[in-house]
Image (cartoon, rainbow, N blue to C red; front, side, top):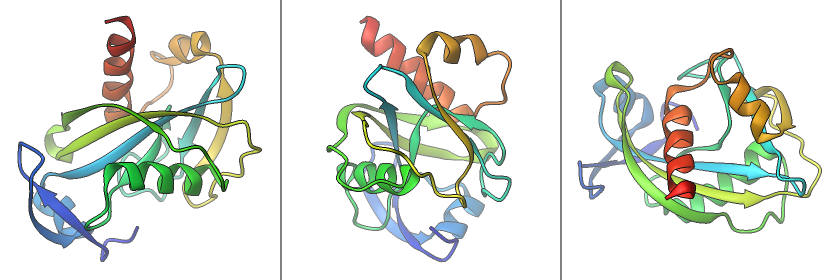
Length: 169
């Protein structure tokens, strides 16, 4: 999605209040919508990747979710499937299962409503080279062990912490 693509602007209650180009939304710190999809393979390992250095937000950081910004008029469910298939480089992925939403406050990076999903992927993945510099399916214990060692995207960490609490609760 380029800086010129139009996305929905929402309020603190996740109600659409208007639309603006993505670059303007970022520059003005307007609240928008993002999908997060945790992908696991048949062995339960989590898809982890390092973002490319050219990403507008959090370049070269690790993430344990795929996903992204919703297009104007796009639902969370539509975006979750679209983004997962695009980033993994697959087609025919099962529809991601919605788990919960939360308002992420990234301080100077802005705020966005975040819808968290999960999906199983047994297909061979071919991540987008424009989005993903490195990837692997890692056991959750290894992901946990790397939390303090690798530079992670902060919104992904927030989503991961909430997902752990959601599963334990």
